[in-house]
Structures are given as structure tokens and as C-alpha cells.
Image (cartoon, rainbow, N blue to C red; front, side):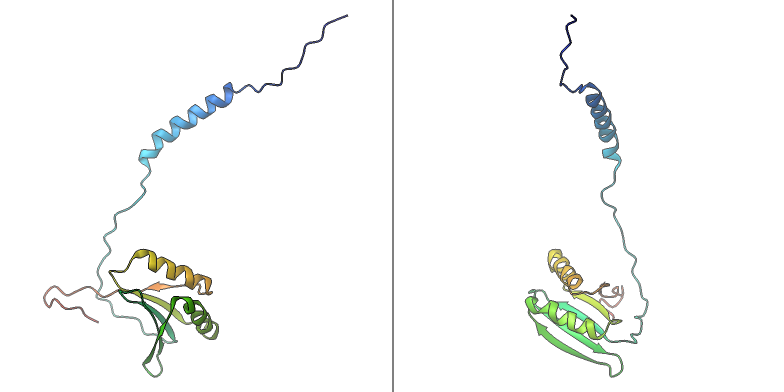
Length: 150
């Protein structure tokens, strides 16, 4: 009678270690080559603002973090300003957007405001169903006058 060999229930990990070491070397070589950020010097523009043919909604955040909705009507040229709490903002924007699907939505945030507040507002607008949001900025200052142009 022949003696039967007992089966080994072990995994040969040597090939896996070889693959892991090769991947480690590849990542170590390529990691410094990845550029995580790009310095951008945005151009200044003296271009005129585009005419709005439809209603627009501007969500304004002042330096203290207070929110105001500015609803503009290009037909009359009037702007309606409504102070609103952050908790009620999504509901009001959703109501405006449901009535005016093609209306532009803008964010006008104070320059000293935390970037996180702007991102929170953009997230809230997205949850309210607004597909596109534009950020507003001031035109470039003229070198001679020292005042901002509008």
C-alpha cells in the first residue's frame, strides 16, 4: 500500500510580494512627478457685462455670513432684495428655480469670506435642483483712478 501525501493548504505569497514591490517602486518614482496644483494668473478684463434676457437670481453672502436673495427683472430693471436665513435658502431657491427653469443663478460672496461658506452654498444650491451656478466678481481696477469700475 502506498502512502498518500497530505495536501498543503498554504498560499504561495512570493509572487504577490514581487508584484507589490514592483508597484511600490513604480509609485515611488511617479509620485514626485505628479503635479497636485497649478498656479494660475487669471487675466483681467475690461469686457462689458452681457445683457440678461431672463430673470436672474443672485445669492449674496456678506462678510458677516448673512444671506440675501436678489431677484432681478430685466424687463423693468428692478431688483428685489430679500434677506433670508440659511435654513430657508434651499426652499426659496427651489421655488424660484421651479418657476424660472432658464433663469441664471449667481453667487456674490464677500472677498474676505471663508471659502467653506461658498462651497456650502454651492452644495445647497445643487441640492435645491440648480444645475448651473456662476460666481460673480468685480471688474479689474483701472491703474490711474484707483476706483473700481462697474
